[in-house]
Image 1: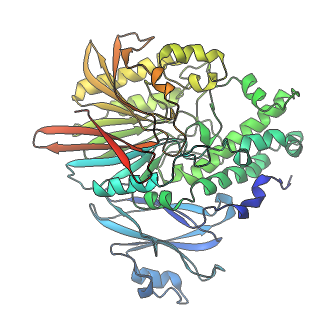
Image 2: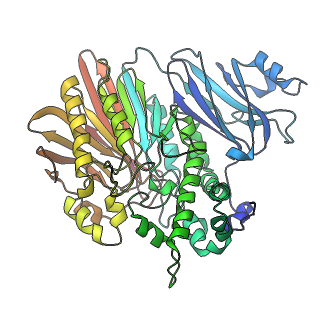
Image 3: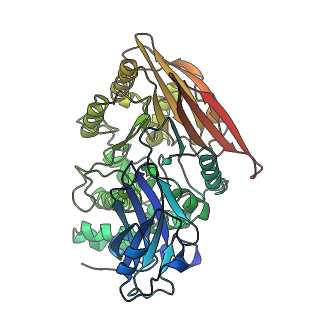
Length: 540
C-alpha cells in the first residue's frame, strides 16, 4: 500500500530547517564516531585531518574525488546518503592517535547535483580531540529540555554559553540528557500528536490494511521534520561539532509521559473531542508513532552514541538504547527510561525493564579500580519533588508526569534496587556516584546518605536549557531535606542548590597528588542575555 500524507509540515520552506550538519559522537583513545547530514542525496565523503582543513589546498574537482581526498586527508570514508535515513549517516573512524586533535569535513561527490561540493566543516570548523590515556582531569557539560518554540522560552545563545564554558575549561565532551526535541510542542503547528488526532481519517487506510510498516514510514517524516527544525540553531550546531556529544531520549522525543499511561489512557489521548473512537485503531496509530519515533531517534541521536545492538528497523522488543563509556578517571552509564518504560509492567521494572536492569547490575560489578567517580545518566531525577506531591498528583492531569518519577510508589522497588547498586559501589570503591538528570525544568543538587553505608550518592539536575523553566512554586514542592519514602533502608537527602532559570551544568573532576576533587557548576542565564550566573557546588 502507498499513499502520501498531506499535513502542516509540507510548508517546511516557510521555516528555517537543518540542511548540512556534522555531530561529533562517541570518542575514545583511538576511535571517533562522526554523524553527518546533507541537503543532497547521493555519494559523499567524510574526511578527517590532523591539521586545520584548508579547502583551497584540496583538488576535489578531480575526476576521481576519492583518490584526491586520500592524498589530502588522514582518513576518508565514503557514504551514500538517501531518504531512507533522511540523508543522515554515521561512521566510526579507527586507529586514531590518543590526545590528538582532528578536524572533520563533509564533501559531496561530483555526481551529486550540488552548487558546491564542500557541504560542512570547511568554513566553521568541526573538530574534536581523542581521549588522553593518563588524564588527570575530566570536564564535561550537561543539558536537557531544548524547546525554543515554547512561549517564554530562553535564548538559544545558551548553547554558545555551553560551548564557551567548555572551551574555557578545556572540556572533554557534553551530554544531552533528554528532550532534545519536543514532538508534542506547545506550538500547535509543530505538534505531531495534535496533527494525528485531528487527521485520523488519513490514517484509516493503513489500519484497514494492517499496514503498520507503511504507517511508520509515513509518520517518520513528521519526526524528522521536528529534528531538522529544532536543531537548525547555529549555536547548537557549533556546540555539537566542537565537542563529542552523547545523547539519550526522554518522553518528548516520543510524546509527553510516554510509558506512564495504561493502554486505555493512551487510547484516550487520541480520541477527538466528543468522539470516543475505536481503541484498537487508536493504539495501532500510537504504537506506529512510537516505532517511527524510535527509528528517527536512532537516525539523529543514538547512531553516534557507543554502539549497542539496537534494531530500529525490526523488532523493538529487544532493542537496547542504554549504553556505557569510560574515561581514565570515571565510568559512565546512560539509562534509557523510555524505550522499555511500561506502567504496571507485569514483569516489574516499569522504568528500565528487566533486561536493562540486569545489564546495569553487571556493569556495576566491573567498575575499574582506577575510577575516581561513577556517573549515571538518569533522564528523570532519582530525587527532586516531594513524594507526597508525586503520589497525590497521580490522580490528576499530571499523573503521567509523576508516574515517570523514581519516587512514585509504583517505582519504589526499582528505585530501591538502583540505590542499592549505587551506594554499594560507592562504599566498595570509596568514590562518589552521581546521577545526572533533566526533565523537571529546574536546576538542583542533592546529597544522599545511608546510615548503614559509607557510600555517598549525589543527584545533579540541569534542566530547561531553552524550555521555559518551572515556576518558582517548584521550589515549594521540592523538599530541602528529609528521608526518601518507601525505602527498605533509611535513605536521607539534603538539597545543596536549586534554581528556576534556563540553565546547564558543568562537572569538573580532577586529581591533585592523592586528592580527588569533584565540583559541579549550575550555570544559568539572567534576564540580561549577555550575563550568566555560575553557582559552584563542591561534591568531593
